[in-house]
Image (cartoon, rainbow, N blue to C red; front, side):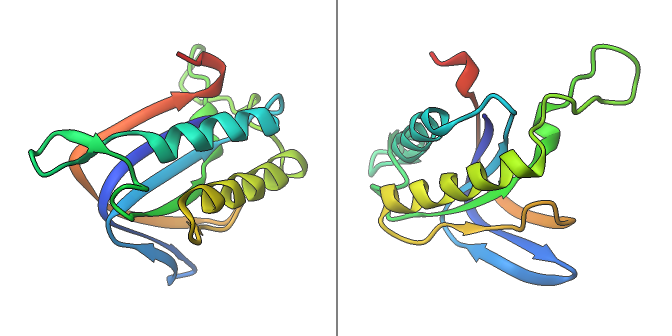
Amino acid sequence: MRAVIQRVSSASVKIRKKIKSEIGVGLLVLLGIEDTDDDTDIEWLCSKITHLRIFNDSHEVMNLSVIDVDGNILAISQFTLHAKTKKGNRPSYIRAAHADIAIPLYNKFIIRLSQLIGKEVCSGEFGAMMQVESVNDGPVTIIIDTKERE
């Protein structure tokens, strides 16, 4: 799994010109899923995301997590995070999981994030054409890949 995590002051997702989900302060998580991903990737990544200390404390030091600030999460599936651009100019998405694998993992990911932060995680719609808007706060953007655990 590959995630792009942005600290936001607000974010929303529209589908067919209607807002499906929106959040205030929190995290916008763009998630790419591969065929080889499984529940262990979900557990590790969700724990990492919810405990990332990327929110400012009273001294303006990034020392607090989304849990600490009672923030929200908007999780969006994005297969293009697995684009391969080594050859030519048209990206290949061969490593991105097909819907039969990706949808159950995406749903488990959202459920696990919800459990860890103690409230509902907002989401987009898997496979839909979406318009995502966000106000990146900082800006703070972190990229995490479960295949490159540090």
